[in-house]
Length: 492
Image (cartoon, rainbow, N blue to C red; front, side, top):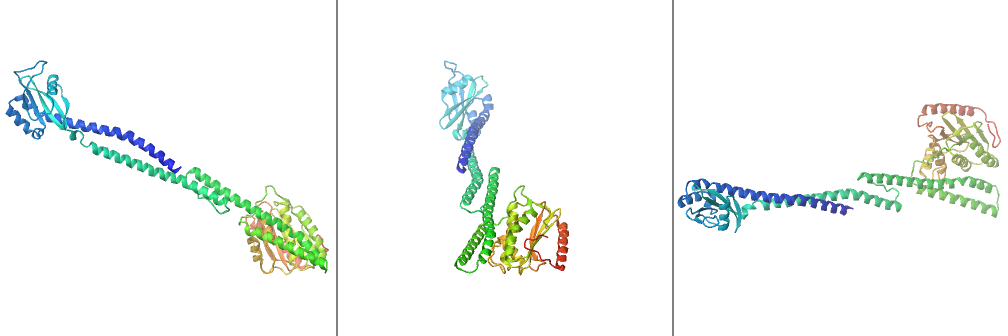
């Protein structure tokens, strides 16, 4: 495309130069010729006064030599003999002064017609100018005009025109080449970026430069690349999420295998469960290491569920395991409907991740509780236990966000459980925090915004402080009151 543009511009400019330069050169040549013969007419007129006074040879000779063309041998005077004539009305020449170059026939024709004429002679042209004498006869003044004077300045003008034409052509080609580069380079970058993206270089982007159309193409390409990265991230996140959901039934299998006692079959079952847990952890870890860092999963349009219903359902599932391990369970605040903008599977996965962590990282017999607090703008879910707690809550949250798989006090954890919970909370404008529970162990607080803007880090900051103070007062009252024993799965 670049060379095609250059060729088109070259052809157009050449045609324009030819169309203007050639006629202009011809005009200049004609002007030079007119100028030369106009000068010759003026020179011929200088001898007319002498001819009107006398026809004496000596007088005319002095008059001719006194002029510049006469002194240079370019002026001649032809006076007819008044006593002789020839048939046809042409008088015989009796006197001529200077060097005659024009043919006698042409001189006679001018004398008879009485009009000036230009005759081509050797080395140039001869201007024949008729002049009336005092006797009534017609004398002819001949002025020689060299060919060089007729074309004086024409060659220089043609050279100048040629130079201007070449400069115009070169300039137009240079401009066309620059325009071609400006058009071709963005297209080449776009093609190279498409090739790199096809090779798997997901960070490839195109500078939004060049003509308007190519800038639009670059914007569309960058948007497409961002969407590809987001789709791949969502796919990998989904693979890790689904793999992590296998942890729930694996926890059940591990606990059941632990109760099988001793024996070859029990050992094989426990080894198989351990191997399966290892494979699931490997899948989760691999998926998280490969996924690009994104801002989190996209919320489904119109997604929503009843928070209380989902909590009651998941607690019914986990209460059977709690009963087997002798864990005391307390559930509170789920007696009324609380609609939240989270899909049911996502909320169930988040609750299973938190409850599974209680069973995985606390000894058997450790009590735990799930409390729900609700207001007009937000809902708070507290999952607390009486275990040893987390030595470094900030590191646990950072591990969940970054995907590192080892941290103090959580050996073997992939960190994806807390990341699933965090993404669920942040998708509603809320957040996730870890602290010390009233039971003595870990308390995980999930803040869920009910309208997408009630999180503690957004417009609902004042409301968040009020709800937090109410939750704190309730937890302090529970700390001071004696705990009532409740069976597994009991609801308060």
